[in-house]
Structure formats: C-alpha cells, structure tokens
Image 1 (spheres, helix red, strand yellow):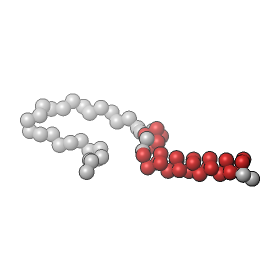
Image 2 (tube, helix red, strand yellow):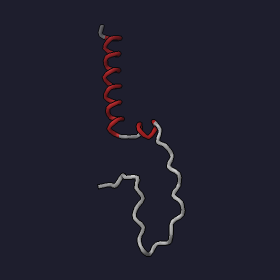
Image 3 (tube, rainbow, N blue to C red):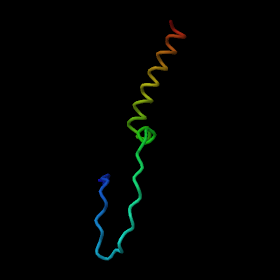
Image 4 (spheres, one colour):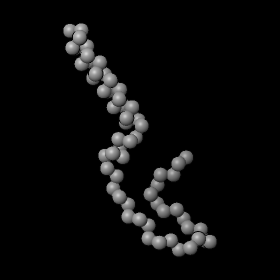
Length: 60
C-alpha cells in the first residue's frame, strides 16, 4: 500500500546528513476537489440536477 504518513523516512547509515526539510504548505480546497471519489459524486449530483431542470423545462 502507499504510505501517506507525513513522518520523515528513517535515514540509512550510509546517507549524508539531510538538510532541513522544506516547510509543509497547507493543502487547500483544490486538493480536496482533485480526489476522484468526490469528483464522481459531484458529477452524479450535477447530472441529476441537470436532468431535473431539463424535465421541468421541456416536459412540464
């Protein structure tokens, strides 16, 4: 499985001392919108709303 923890990886004995890690930037809402399950859910809801609007316009 993919390791998504934010803990630094353990350093090996042969590696040189690492410099300071870069400062973590906060993740915004665009990161959340890039998640596939959320986008599929929003697409289904949008399609249902579109079908309801077209039904109201053309059938009723």
